[in-house]
Amino acid sequence: MILFELYQNAARRLKDVGIPDADLEASIMLAHLLNVPRAELFLPEKIILPATVIAFEEYVSRRLQREPLCYILGEQEFWSLPFKVTPDVLIPRPETENMIEICLQVVRNNDSDFCGKILDMGTGSGVIAIVLARELPGANIVALDISWPALCVALENSLTHKVDEDICFVQSDWLGGIKNKPVFDLILANPPYVEHDILPSLQPEISFEPKLALDGGSRGITEIKRFADHIFSVLKPGGRFFMEIGADQADLVIDLFSGRQFKNINIYEDYAGLPRIFQADKPDDPENLMG
Image (cartoon, rainbow, N blue to C red; front, side):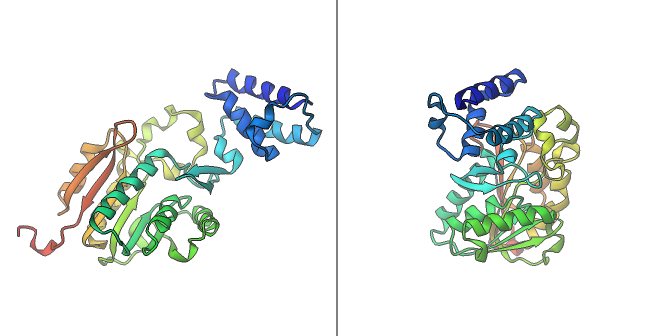
């Protein structure tokens, strides 16, 4: 079969089921399978072997079922780096990159040579911990997740990016496996924050992602409530907490953390101008909050 005809046929079928950017996705899948630059897909009269046609048809069939493209390819770009992803982990998104950018800006503005201890809660594919290990090479990082398969993906990604010696991976139900002592200078979390009742109405690709990493229960803050009481106790004095939240949850989360002795509670906007990144700091002297 001629390569360009194979591409055109796939793009048309993807477009027919309403997949945005069908042309682009067809070219990405085909280039990935052939391990060639996308520009080569448009060479005239290039013939494709039957085995390749069969393999590409499997890719297209999976995408027609609305399986996310990155699960089909087994990879997602994040922070301009390739990360392995499987259906055991949430697909990394720009909002999480935004949280890391804000966190790094705050940290570097206050300590240009940061070498403290960091906790990544709900690490999933490990993108937060791995990026921080690269950007803050003096840091000591703990990355936790309740899912053992997710931790296996995160460990593989840390090996790929050569930061495995800088990260300790821990299987834990939030802070249940962490000693209740003030040991962390920085905590980041990307918890499940999608409201349970709206999950069925989201785009069909969402159904392929792990529900454990998406379902935030009532109003999307059930899981956040589970660890909110404990963040303060595991942060060092002067430590900082950053969390990705839903665009409609700012007031809920501020109310949740305002009564817990934190200071400098802030909400930052994401790239779309929506309130998506929450910050709360532990006072330098939590024993003397009135001083």
